[in-house]
Image (cartoon, rainbow, N blue to C red; front, side, top):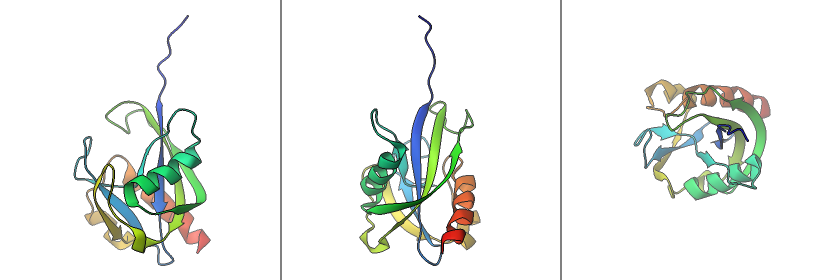
Length: 140
């Protein structure tokens, strides 16, 4: 039997409000420790990416989210230094006042698109955030 290398799958969540402000978490662990990132994480075996997105948002931000749109799939083999990781990105709504950094997040904050260039972002999250902003603009 042939052994195949299989990429990991993650879900990233762009939680935004009516003014296109959005939530980012500061990563507690490597890779990209102390960088800002979208809430997200690995899909568990037997779990859908949608369920993983909702679970990861709650674990990292304490926010219960409603997924709005599937934004895109990001699959560049070198996008994650831990190995080939494919992420599925969603836009979501949730109550910002419930936010609290938890799990793999050391901090949580609200950002705006105007400040995007000033933020030290993990992975390929600048591209994902820009794509999410385009999608979110259509839904408000």
